[in-house]
Image (tube, rainbow, N blue to C red; front, top):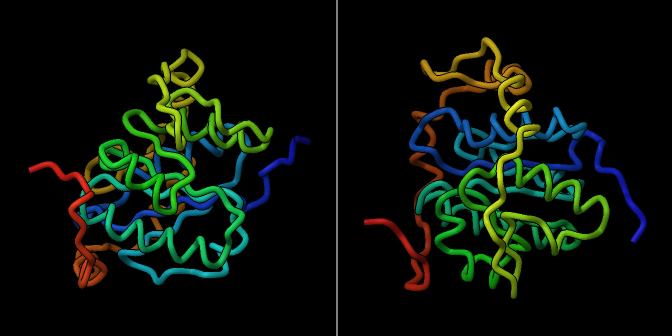
Length: 209
């Protein structure tokens, strides 16, 4: 398959659904890695802003952060909406609860799942999607294939170190590439709980007690 660059703003969309009212560093960190690799990702935090169908429609690669059970439930809902609007885009779930529930997510709307150190794996997946070979990326699980852990290369470590800037979110370091987005983002303390209402339940989802 011919390579098709994903360098346009909005080709990649990162989504956070719920992080207990904190700034979503699970968006800020991979944004920095992706921008450093030449991509132009956008971010959507549905705990403080409404779902944006226009951004979902133009994205070619959507990565949904699911660090906990509530985020997983809301993330599946978002993925279902995106799949209806944009059936051709690749949807990836990443984070702790993504790897715990890989079979469930891949059977639903997910095209891939990443757990653990997800920043370099997300970059590698974006690069593989450009080249049309997303089925063979280290650290990325797809239907029918469990991936081996992806090693964090010296290049990735340098990229991560170089991306750390002066931005601090709630006394925690943020990334320079994502700092302009962080500074303009409202607090999610008052609105995160409203996003979590009326979530469905399913015995097939694994959670940590």
